[in-house]
Length: 260
Image (cartoon, rainbow, N blue to C red; front, side):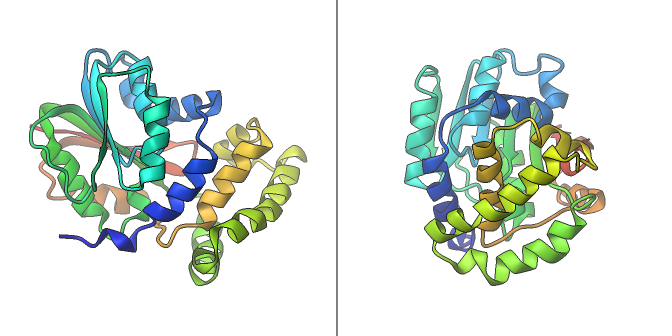
């Protein structure tokens, strides 16, 4: 069994406990990340798995787009409690304490998703295998991860700094320190620094949401930034067909595949 303690569920549990309210900006992000499903009404009537659900924002989006039922799973108890509250209006969504490395499902879900999770895993390919196992024949697997393209500075400069320093500091201190780069980024965007689509989207978000995103970049123990070739390689040997990578906001990747 894979050691899940090498990830960051406890550290993300801290931030999700403090940024738990669902927002219109999160709904917009969900539509960007799942466009290949959402744009064709692909959720309607479906039974889905949201592995690494956080506060339930993506399960909420799936239900709002017509899904019939689902399972939202994660590891941190604070995170799961927030998901229960946010999904209280959807009793057909079960909230469960489960590791994406050891999902207790086989051929069960119409759609299995994991959004913003695999880039923080030591063994992301194992997670793809588990999502594939959980999906029924004819069903779809979808992941979203950070890209490398347009984020070279973050991958080569900020990420080593995070690994050496911020990932080791107390979370309360990191949250406070995150105000500094948030303010700098906020000012740069207001002055027109928006060289790629994600920053143009981010510039419309409230300061508190931008702070949450910056903090989320600084806290994890593990972060991968995937090129297109690297993210597609996670699906090698999965058995999925029609695997496609979609560039999201010019800085991240959604990859989908269908189980035969």
